[in-house]
Image 1 (cartoon, rainbow, N blue to C red):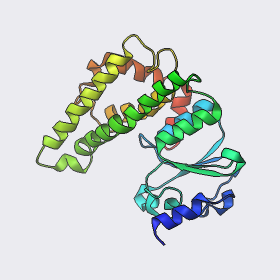
Image 2: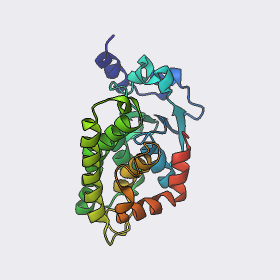
Image 3: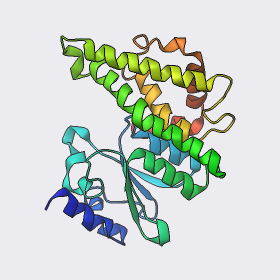
Image 4: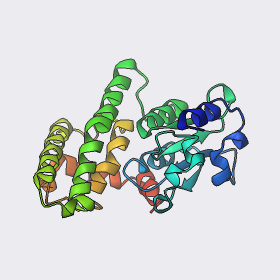
Length: 244
């Protein structure tokens, strides 16, 4: 059975107990949203979001050391083999609904709860554009900085890849810094999914990825202050601690 076959099976299921992933990670609270993740920059997006909006959930740890993200059970929910993924037992129409991709999960949860995304169409699309900015730019580029600065790439003799991603990370931080000048959050006074999508990435860049000096982070004063405001939020602290 290939990945597409497994996915087609799971996408048509109507009972939480029928999802193959629940066999590897049995739910203790089947009435709650089931989250399969880890404390990576993408992995903490849904935990922060869920803590912010107050929806009850059950967090399952996907062990990368055991390559659980490549297991048939996990692939049945996300054929791409990446965290995070989730099952909402009360999805659209009241049926269990599986979803993957952290950006899609943020938008789904925002609409489900009616929180952290503007109700007016123009505001909503402003929030969505910053989520796309994170997905297309911040995540991939900051992740490459982490790979070449802290992980296997640090041993590469050729430092041009590291420099290339450092320069792009600085450019993106510059974009963010300019937008945040005079603002508390990316949409102004309103904290939204736009901010949640990026908090984990910036936090990891200067912490876990050990790139604070490398990207000259403290020179981006507006991003610095935005991050401090975000990390001061109790829900963000709880969300970061779920898989710590």
